[in-house]
Length: 405
Image: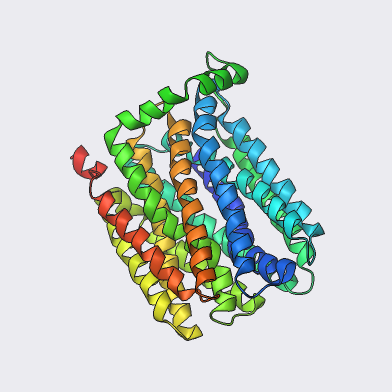
């Protein structure tokens, strides 16, 4: 295992984690709903859920094909760089947004989120290359752990500007992401030459998509894991993207209080990712995921009943512990199921399941809230079913640690 490769790979997680912390959770959703749209009857949440769902749909549809093209054309790092650049430019352009610019804010977020999420496909595909199977849980946890540290530092960075100079926040996010992402593009292994150019690989992908899907379908364990992942990650991602709006509208947090709340969540997620990294290798990712999904079920039910900000803080800490560990263990689980040479395309299907599922969750949350007259609590009960279904389906997948013994 090359420590320089692992360090550069983890540093990219540190760099990109400022984006979900600020842009999809704590700051931009609140700014878009309350300032750009300024509606309190559920319309703001509906516009926001549409933006999240549309960007997720584009990533879901394109990722498996682009992953296959990157594998065949030897273009993983180039795709990762290109999508990262698209995201950074769109985030920087958000500094032009103001009250009433609903469509502009919608489009800029959609483009930024497509770039961010698509880059992750190629980033995640490096995991099987840089870590042996017995270390993948630890390396995956390292990435998420330093990533949550990056989220926390990013939130601390923007706190002084989130109220009075919010246009500077988007420029700071782009700058932070860019600076700390550069080592990954310098140090990570170069794209290996293949028998195809990118153009040839693209033509092959467009004409052979049924074959690409068939490869996944033929791998029973991988297919069953992706189906379970589809449902449980939908609940997780929906809570992430709606948490900022819930904190302000249901529990009465102001913008600065919301940022502080998510600082607490980032540190608890960091603890969750690090504390369960080695157990993921030792016990197997399935046992870790089973326990964490029970935690998520408890959190989503509790969100319906909790009334006070103090209890909401406690629930947020528990959710943070589950957040870091569910993402880290899921990535390690999938990595253990991927055949050599097909990493990008399989992580493309990972993105397909994660992002196509998150079309369902935010829209479900938005419409349930709208039908409840702006009351967000019933939407959490709808998410509980997603966690339960994911937990049940996960039992069909053998634990790779148990199989290897």
